Structure formats: C-alpha cells, structure tokens
Image (cartoon, rainbow, N blue to C red):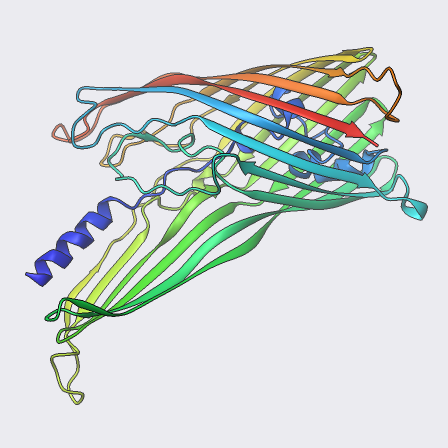
Length: 437
C-alpha cells in the first residue's frame, strides 16, 4: 500500500512540475518608455540608467546625474481555440502584470570627466517577487508570456570612453537561484513525524551585459551589445527516513526562468529634430533547456536489513527531460523620434518569429510569430518658480503586440488536448518620471 501511494505521488509530480515562463517585459519590449516606443532599438541612443540593459557603453555619453522611476503594465488578451477547452487539461492563459523600476546614473568628474560613468537600476514586479509556476506539460500555455515580468532584477554597470568616438561598457544582471534541502523522519506505525528540518538558500548569480558604441560623426552612432544567457534555477532535495522501512530520497531540480544569449546590433542617425533608429537582435533560443525538471525518487529497505547486508532499492525512478527543439531567431526592429521644444514624439515597430516548434506532440507549449507597433511621447514639465536646475521629464509609451494565428494538429489523434490554435494580442504601457541634476 505504501509503495503504491509513493508511486502515485511520484507519477503526479512528474506531470505537474514544468516551469512556465521564459521572457520578461525588458526582453520583449525594452527597458523604459523610450526604448519601448522605439520598439527596443535603444542600444544606440539610451545614455541614462536605462542604458544598463540597452547598452552600458552609452553611460559614458551622459553629461548629468540622472534619476528616474516608472511603472509598466501588461494586459494580455491571448486566446487558444480547441475542441474541449475545459477537459482534463484546461488552457492556461497569461494574466496581466504590473511592474516598477527605479534607477540612477552619473558621470564621473575630475580627470574622468566625459570619459567614465556608472549606473544602478532595479526592475521588479509590484504584485510580488520572482514567481515560478509548475504546470502539466500537456496543459496548453503560452510560455513566453505567462509569468511575464515576474522577476526581481538588479542592474549595475559602468562605462569608459577613451576617445570621443568610442566607448565600452559592462553591466551585470543579478538574479536569485533557489536551493535547499529538507529532512523528515516518519514513524509510520505510530503515525508520527519524529523529525523535520528545512534549509533554503537564495543564491545570487551575476549575468553580464557587454556593449560597444562607435560614433564616427556627431549625428551617427553604431552599437553592438551582447547579453549573456540568464536563468533562475531551483533545486530541492528531500530526504525521508521511514522507520522500519528505509531511506526515501526525492530530488526536484530544473530551470524556472530562462533567457537566451542575444547579440544586438543597432544604429541611429540624427538630422535636425529627427532621430531614426534601426537594428536587429539574434537570440539563441536553440540553447533552450528542457522545460520539465529532473525528478529522482529512490526508496531502499535499509531499515529492514542488518548492517552487514546491502540495502536493496524498492523504488528507483527518474525522468529523462525531452529536448524542446527550439531554434535561433532574428528580430528586426526600427524606430523614429521627432523633438521640438519641450515635446518629443516616438514610434517603432518590431517583428519576432517564434522560436518554439509546433506543439504537435505530447507537450503543449504554445507560441506564434508576433508583431509589435509602439507609440510614445515625452514632455518637459513647466517650472515657473525655477526651483530645479533642469526641468522634470515625463515619458510614456504604448505598445500593441499581435500574435499571428498558429494552428497545430496533434500527431496523436487520441491526445487529450487535441488540436490547438493560438492567437491574440496584448498591450504594454510604460510611464516614467525622470530628472537630470
């Protein structure tokens, strides 16, 4: 009876532990209202703390101390059509998100004036901290959007500008990894737990962002940025001593949030009040690890045999995660900005092919090609009393992302989910108040 119960528990665990998100709002839309309005093409133009993600090399172009804070909201309106949407595996649709950010950047003075700068920024969910979900791999779900933005990120970086036409920068993203272990002793015949211990560690890991900006003329910039693959891992072993039976070892580990290596190339051209930006991002989604975590369960009979004899394994189970088969993608992007007086207007567009293969097997990880169109504006606030050296600036951007319909027929006609068709859109709003000192 005990063995049957353990087998049922492990089988259930195998089905219900698949992480559910692999992108955040920064990766999909850009960091800050200006980057969002320019469809993410801020690598060549951002020169405040937003450059920590866009391109840390541009920090060295800043002339003033810059402080700002803002908020982002994402309203997801995705849909999945299927024959039986409420069967054993009901569809999981992305929920809305509310995010916040704050940051500061400053150039150095003295001999390093106009040659070096550093910055610091936080990007955080306002409804909680990093969230990892565990869903059955057969549950239809949009893995790039489901827990969008639910990740606490600290960005820190610096830049140097050895010559007026060249700057280098580096930043790190600090993410938290969850590790721990638990120990439980059970007296089955007495129906008692005789020992219980739990240890959990939150380990911080840095992931680099490197950037180079070349400015051959005052009106032209070219930037190259590399962002290392980043991940949030978890590992939770459980050791249970079952009195009069033996030792039960259970280990669950995997990757919750994962982002690929990206290489971004962008350029900008300034002509009077007009600024034009364009670029592309190469994302190595082919390195996407299996979404299902590794699960190991072993139970021996060490309590039933003498110390001179070797314990036998009563249960020895482990899964073999299946590769996803994702592919690398190239995302083209372009933006335009027009400034006159204290007003600035922006617009941008980008196209993201889907990195995920068709969900025609047992797994139902869904995605579709996405096109994003964005508009934005900024205004300097009036300061009639001249209390500040420089006026406050408010920026806002609104992006509309549309998923092309993607219909998939399951290879197995008896699949409990059946054929799926994913489509829909979302709205992304970014607003920030910032100030140069």
